[in-house]
Amino acid sequence: MAIKIGLVGLTQSGKTTIFNALTGKSIKTGAYGAQSEDHIATISVPDERIDYLTNVYKPKKVTYAQVDFTDIGGQALSGQDRESGKESLSLKNLRQVDALAQVIRLFEDDSVLHPEGDIDTVRDVAKINDDLVIADMMTIEKRLEKLQLNIKKMGKAGSSLDEKEMEILKRLQIVLDEGKFISEVELNADERKLIKGFCFLTQKPCIYIANIGENEVGSAPSDQLSKLAKYAEDHKIPWLAICGKMEMEIMELPEEERADYLKGLGVDTPGRVKLIQAAYKACHYISFLTAGEDEVRAWTIANGDLAPEAAGTIHTDFQQGFIRAEVCNYKDFVECGGMAGAKQKNRVRLEGKEYVVQDGDIINFRFNV
Ligand SMILES: Nc1nc2c(ncn2[C@@H]2O[C@H](COP(=O)(O)OP(=O)(O)OP(=O)(O)O)[C@@H](O)[C@H]2O)c(=O)[nH]1
Ligand SMILES: [Mg+2]
Image (cartoon, rainbow, N blue to C red; front, top):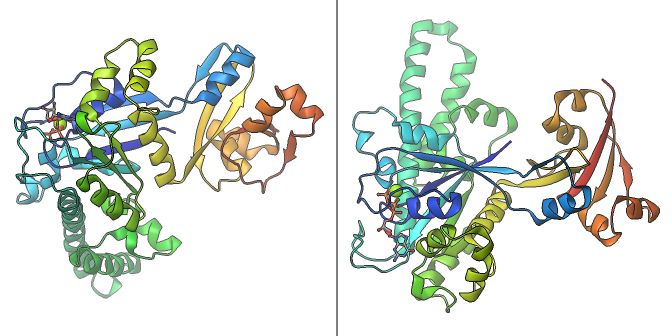
């Protein structure tokens, strides 16, 4: 399972620049509001635990966790096609992502037009939030029209499921009308299931990416950045600051030079690593690892998943025939100098069906087919 992250933001906020910085692509940037196609690319999640295990096992194959990034044009969300009522391909792509990363412009550059005229981070977040709300409202309106027709057609025998759905959608509509997000509505498991297929944008976890100027890298946060940080913290939204343009240029350097270059600028963690960490946090995902001479690999699962569910991400047979999980956390593995040492020190545990998998667990599943 690859985590999918969608970049959203006002036009010219630097989404495509950041997309390039994240994926190493060199897609053209800067054509004001003219981006008509979406960009989607998958990258391997840098993971030092995988590097370490690769060194130990010298496996035939190494597989990092995968992240998918989607970059749509700023105009696609602010919706010229709201009138037509037809959902654009960009919105459809955006509905498929697990988390939305909002790119907020902080860099000052007179040659790059700001659609709102000046830098104002919290205003820009509010604008994007409104657009997300409107996109979901349109989905609901369309669906309600259809449901009403259905129920009318079927008369008294109208399906109770349709009525149930209508009742939920109306509740959500009221919330959206107040400018609030669907994620703020408390829903039970049945209700969640009923609305899952709509992939509402305002139900997805958010991350803020402050796109700061080159001159702000390594210096104290500007007033606008502090304002955004406070807003994010008040709303419990993970945020990070990166300079998209600089990180895009660094991605153009040979890989072995990048880390030194960043260090020279006072940046210890590249933006893509920070973003991926924030996305795992926002989506409540963790990774567990498998390691052997054939393959060293990272797997993404939901925080709270039990051992059989984790096994199921490898193969359904592993889940169905699950017997036990042999677990050694990565930290113990390193501390004991490897699996043999960990076994000696009793740091390898046999866990059953109820075990909640932890981030960094190295697991060997035992199963019956
Ligand atoms: N100085 C500076 N310029 C930047 C930075 N990030 C982006 N830009 C510039 O801003 C302009 C717009 O960048 P894009 O990445 O195309 O913006 P976008 O959000 O994808 O725009 P749309 O696709 O039209 O919505 C380009 O000229 C970039 O070079 C930055 O961190 N610093
Ligand atoms: Mg773009």
